[in-house]
Length: 167
Image (cartoon, rainbow, N blue to C red; front, side, top):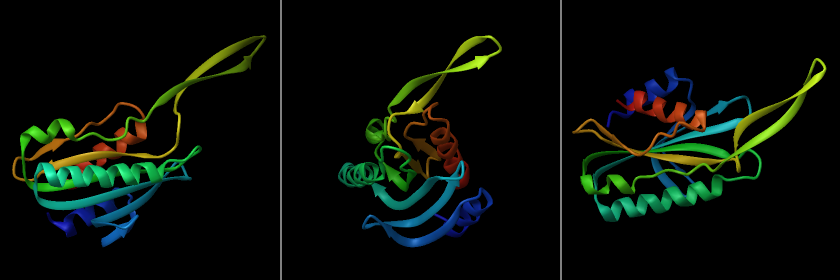
């Protein structure tokens, strides 16, 4: 993992407060970065290098992901994050276990008055604020694992951005 190159790429993509070898909720990461989305929503990038990702290590990282995911939730906005594990060796059988938050969605409706007739508008939103996505990059195979959801759009945007930054 080339930490300097990743930091430069993060800065070019608008990530701020980039720290190396720092902790978040008492969990150690190689790189932590932050950015704002829509003025008030905080997004975090947690990047960790693990030379060999076996089942025991993946279970440990899934537990860390779950803990941060739960602590990031809020009724209103919450904190959002992308947790990226970079590895040099990974068992292919573990790919199906790499999953981020489900980001439960709801459809909201509201009425507006347009001329003399009311119109109903629908929009999709999160039920709770906060949550995270988990991605794993195998450096040797140049292969990504994990899901990039179509919705919410910001989760898709920053998950794809992490792929660009790290490759």
